[in-house]
Amino acid sequence: MSMSTVSVLGGGSFGTVIANIIAENGYIVNFWMRSEALVTEVNQTHENPQYLPGYRLHENVVAYHDMSKAVANAEVIFVAVPSAYFRTVVRDMLQWSRPDAILVSTTKGIEAGTFKLMSQVLSQEAPHARIGVLSGPNLAKEIAARNLTGTVIASEHSSVREMVQKVLKSEYFRVYTNDDMFGVELGGALKNIYAIIAGLASAMGMGHNTNSMLVTRSLTEMARFGRCIGADPMTFLGLSGVGDLVVTCSSPLSRNFRIGLALGQGKTIEEAVAEVGQVAEGVNTLKQVKEKADELGVYMPLVNGLYQIVYNGSSVKHIVASLMLGEQALDVEYEANQMKTLNSKH
Image (cartoon, rainbow, N blue to C red):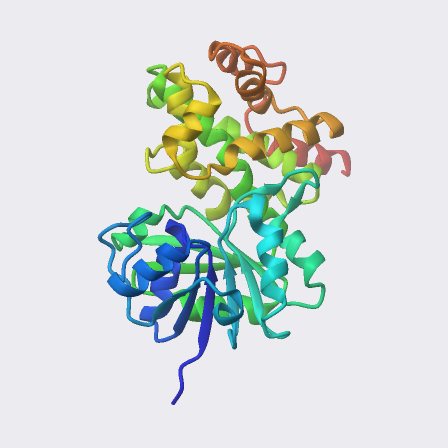
């Protein structure tokens, strides 16, 4: 019996681990990479030395540089490339992919200039495709170490949710489902901003109390912004919201957290990005969200404080002032607002 084919586009650390999980589940995985040299190395050594050295890849993972070969006959295509290249890669892929292929984004970012999430980019480029997004507290190095991990597949199509669960589930990687694709994807993008803030706070010597305060106030900002642009605020209480927020705001494995650490140590944003050496989506997302929040009049003191540091050269103490001197001091504002609404009806 021939095995089904799944494609993973993007040779970074997360693309590598999901390609391997899928291969271990008995699928042929066509693994597209931009670098021809890395393709050769992966196929010869069965590991990705640039991003996950020492992590052994299943023999079913076959790397390609040629997109036409990488997506040929694939039933499901996971797109795991940075947001800056996402649309270009998708357009190239669609020339060669099956018209009925399921398309799944794993990219936690927002397209510069359009404020489109990656699922919206997919919908624009492939309006008739079945689309999903994969998001959650998924540090690739921990998945590679087979630490127990949960993720979320969100889609309006039950067939997408079921297929992704089927190809990705394993004894250490649990796949949950959600139909609020917009909220799940937005949570994954927004949390990168707050991971930078958490890294800054850590570099300044602030402790667990501060981190806890940052996480909970960040969650409030995320839900406030999400509700304003059409997401369900309750989605942010799941793995793709608070789950992802907690892990990226407390782990040096998070690229965005490391950006914040470097900033807190006095480096410029350019020096911080160079030191991390990989794409940290939070820097781009910060600019997009700040502009959209200003446009819509959404109160986001932490976003504003970090923006002043990154783009206007303000002192890192600006973030503390943004948090401590903010105008609003309500703890759980959604529950309170809901109760007021209920009371007004009786």
